[in-house]
Length: 77
Image 1 (cartoon, rainbow, N blue to C red):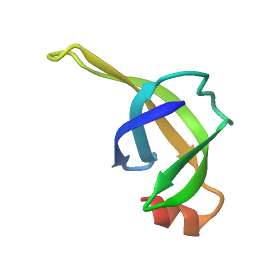
Image 2 (spheres, rainbow, N blue to C red):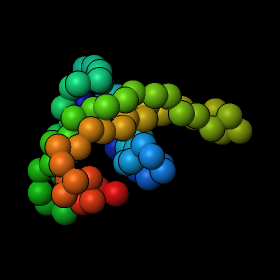
Image 3 (tube, rainbow, N blue to C red):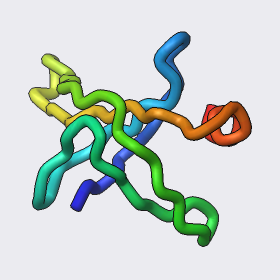
Image 4 (tube, rainbow, N blue to C red):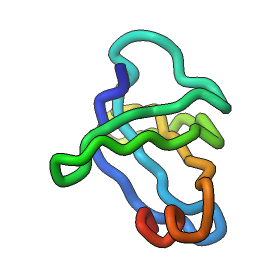
């Protein structure tokens, strides 16, 4: 389970969701299902990174995604 704490867009990378991996694995090629405005959305993981805030000593897992088509890309970016 991946608990999303936030998201943002990075130019030429797309949507980045960041949070905590509560259980299981997050690997490139796996699919992540989550809720947006009451709808279930399933996106393919394209990248797994770590991000941190040194001053607060916090760290998160950051995921980027691969979109099926341009319509899906526009929806999430």
